[in-house]
Length: 490
Image 1 (cartoon, rainbow, N blue to C red):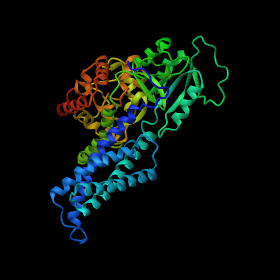
Image 2 (image 1 turned 90 degrees about the horizontal axis):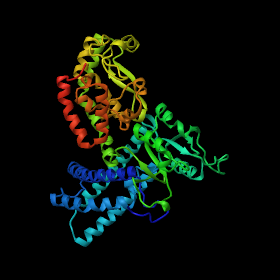
Image 3 (image 1 turned 90 degrees about the vertical axis):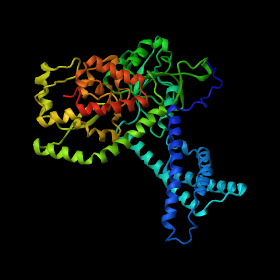
Image 4 (image 1 turned 45 degrees about the vertical axis):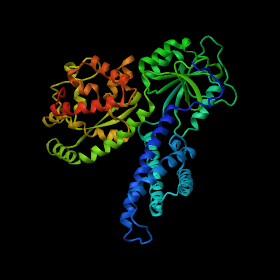
């Protein structure tokens, strides 16, 4: 293992931030090429009306400009830090200034390259390219920042962090650093851990002290009762062997556990060193995912959902009108479901049951055909004739595309359970929601209601542990025949 060389975490970069930077650079490369194509198209359309424009550029002029601009712009994006603007607190004014510097410097660099190489480039095309790439790069970042703010405020919200230890200057430093982030976490409180050491009767002066939620032994209860994304251990509980029972609890439920350390004390980085809110941790995580791949997954989710909503608009209207004509209002069924790490959200479906279906469920519990705390009936008397057809064709699931669009769901992921049913699930099975719930999953394509509860939970954990972008694509492809033939639906 590599020994620690410095007491300062200067070389540690947050994995999520690095992933966002990589995705941003890839998007910028596509934006530059798109800007060139747009500039060429505008040049051809504007030339009949703007006589000052030069002649129509030839193909080799386009190719030369792309060849020169792409590496130059990507290098300057790194120089001006525009690739990390999404991970930092960047205002629109700062973004405009950085983009202006990028394009002015790029123009100067392009002129120098043209002078040194004596290459011929259409100046009109360069001007149009500068305008197009400035506007597209600004629009791209502005939309992404707005989307991130929307998801932060309305859907997933801040990362929910639970601290374990005793209030100290180290804990206080973390709280101050975390509060300065663009999207600060929600520290729900701390559990006191003395572990045979003398309790701190009074926290050190000038320390920020979060709300005390109880003692270390109450960790399992806290994780069972409310959503927690991350548990952070501070002295005297920052040694894994001293809190093994609590670490096993985090592992079973699927919550990441991090231990505060001093880098000067590190002999190795096992199992892995991370940087959270300018603070170094050793993190134990169950089947950690590649942050860049997750960024791609959750980045494409709203795009594909929006496309599907538009393309399927006639089908939406037909189903909605049919429900209204045969079953009356309401057309949609809204139910509180458990999402990522137990967060609740309102899931949308086309209504397939009688209006008072939820009240009738208590009388039908004896006829439940699914093991575990989940309720399923193949011949559910609450389901209407039209509703049975909607369920068999999975058309009742269509409105969940709006849940994907707003960020509370993904296209692929474990199916979200009603909040009451999720609350009854204990132990390792709760790890199924360490990724966003989805419209389709291994359980959907593996038989749905023909699969018992225990196998369902194992399929969800198999998805969590073996997740990849390729697995998501495979599940989406397998979903098509399942929907067409109604296999396992009821």
